[in-house]
Length: 242
Image 1 (cartoon, rainbow, N blue to C red):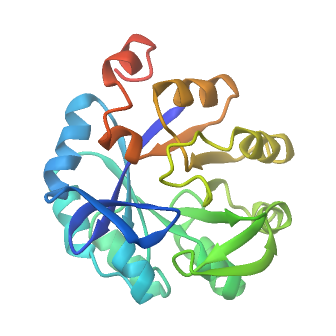
Image 2: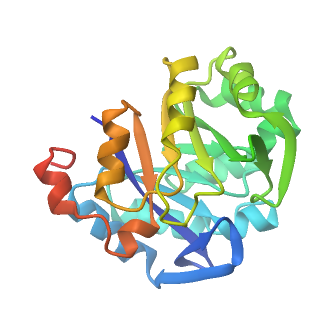
Image 3: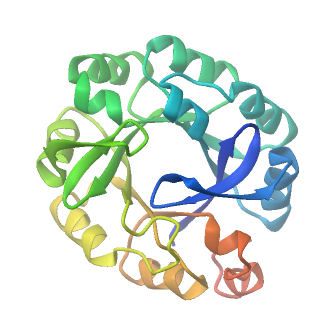
C-alpha cells in the first residue's frame, strides 16, 4: 500500500503552496502550521513532509522553530527539507525533531559532503532530493538547473547506499495536472530497491490510487488536499488510511 505524506510548505511561518516553484505564485492556506499538522494527524496520516521555502531561498534553515513546534505538538514522523547546506543545518533539523532530512542541492554541488552525511547519520535518516526539470536535476530552490541527468544521478548515490528518494517533477508541482507516473515507473524499473516518494501534480484521490496501482512506494501531496480535491473518507474506504 502506498505511503501517504501530506506536505506543509513554509514561508514566514505560514503554510503556503507555490506553482512550479515560483515564489511569486505563493498562496497562503493556513496561518498556523501546527494546527494544520494536528489536522493531518487527526485524519490518520502518520508522516509529514515539511519544506522550508525561506530556507531554500536563503541557503540555510530558517523555519526550524516551526518544525520544533510541529514535532512537539504531534507524533507525526516528519521529514524536513529546504536550506540544508551544512552539517549544522542537519543537526538543527534533527534537534528540532525531524526524523529525516531531505537533501538535494548539496548532492549535486558537493557530492563528497553528501556522502559523508550519509555515513554519519545513516541512510534511514537521509532522503535524496531529486527535483527534475526537462530531465535535469534542479537545485537551490529550483532556481538553477544542473547538468545532471536524473537516472545516472540516482545511480551514483543508490550505489553508495541511498534508499530513500524524493523525486519532484517541477513542471507538475502545484499545477493539479496529475503526477508524472511514467517518470516514476521508469525510476522503479531501474531501481526497484529504493523507497521512492513521488511528488508533484497530484490533483485528486484518483491520482493517489493510480500511483498505488503502479506500486509507487510513497506520494507527497499538498495543494490537492488544501483545495479539497483529496477525500480522506475515500482514502479510508480504500484502506489507505486507518
